[in-house]
Image (cartoon, rainbow, N blue to C red; front, side, top):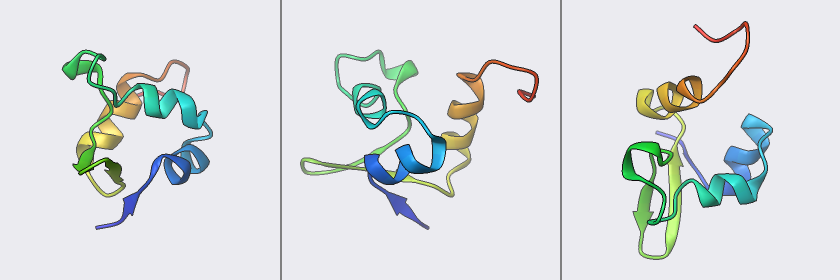
Length: 66
């Protein structure tokens, strides 16, 4: 398992860190949140989780989406 913080996920996906943070907030609908783990106030993303990659692909648009 490789846990990433919002900065790490931002760097890997080339998405703004602030957008990633917004997608994990409790006021975002649960079915639209990026799959994440909370350790107290700390949010982490399991880079190896199929749910994370499925979420990213489901929100992508373009020819490479399959």
